[in-house]
View 1 (cartoon, rainbow, N blue to C red):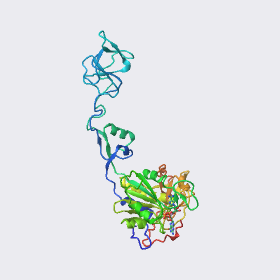
View 2: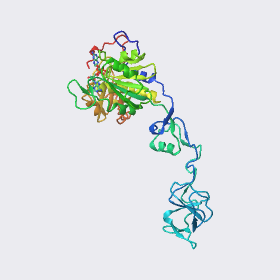
View 3: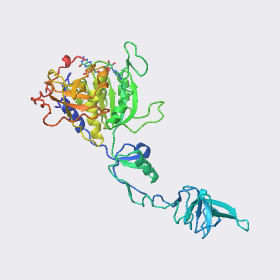
View 4: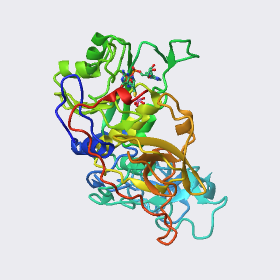
Length: 445
Ligand SMILES: Nc1nc2c(c(=O)[nH]1)N[C@H]1C(S)=C(S)[C@@H](COP(=O)(O)OP(=O)(O)OC[C@H]3O[C@@H](n4cnc5c(N)ncnc54)[C@H](O)[C@@H]3O)O[C@H]1N2
Ligand code: MOO
């Protein structure tokens, strides 16, 4: 449910609504050309054709001599037309001169002189009888492809060999499906990027890994910017698509900016105010889930999405999976990931009004809630096989519970055959997220 934010409060979406909304608000980024060095892992949008024959000229496959007819051969200058019984030196990859019929490998020929003292090439060394056959050791033009042939079909997920083939064909760019470029704005004056944090400080958990997760979710990880807690820094950083002083190079404008911290409502939490000042609008303002409930998604007038992840590390990851994953999928021509189901290895009490996202480990095929899953902890997620999406009414032991795999983990096992399938969770009418103001006071961080 999307309600207009009420003065002083916000209307939250349910977990399912939030991920669907994050998918629905974005349209696929149109295809465009990328330089070959950026093409790896992209999906080709249109066929790549051979611009000319490949190879585009006949060349030697060996070091030796280009020859015409049978030996002995009179040696002539490289590159000139060869008359019968003439030869000229050639190296691997060298252009076959007009008149040449074959290449004799260097180890199969010996140079001597004739009666007049002129240099003569004759068979010798390791030469085999009949060498060189007509056409031997010549890479013919158009052997690999003729001009206009389809080298790579639209829809191909580009691997290194595809990129090398495009380069071999002389292409500088490939037309690929759009993929969102994501920049990062890591906020918090207490956040340090190195070393052991002192009381009052925290080590940044996002900088070293968020980009990699974004790539796993289908985005391109762009630059990271760190700012403190001042409102001016926030606004400047969100505004900024130009290179910063001292930054020599900058990327194309981002499609998505992911911020960390500042999603709360204290004096140092500036997400909403900064977005409003820039003329943006909130698309998701809080989610009835735990952890990660303050997650925000906004759109700026220039079309950039801004995803506000809460500062607490586990809460941020859950918000990223819930909102970031569908948003990046939609922008990148992907699908909304299906929610799987796993049999739950514990009884989980009701928690009316909110979905709980619980990292779990699989123990004998049952999802067992992980320990150490406070919003600021990472041990539970670090050892997890997936995340359970526990409905507000809780789960009975052995019931199937919705779940998703981790972007870096193995897919979840398919539930067993019909006979030994645990019974499905009774579908109780899910309490819609309240239409009035939500009281978050019960949510202790
Ligand atoms: N009065 C209320 N207070 C809070 C509520 C609430 O409903 N009412 N919600 C709590 C919940 S839940 C969360 S989550 C956080 C959201 O906080 P913010 O997004 O505003 O983030 P900060 O306040 O800036 O930081 C929260 C926490 O996270 C640490 N942090 C920040 N950045 C990093 C980083 N890069 N690496 C590791 N840790 C980071 C920061 O030091 C704080 O400890 O609000 C609760 N409060
Ligand atoms: O998002 Mo907060 O840390 O729910 O737990």
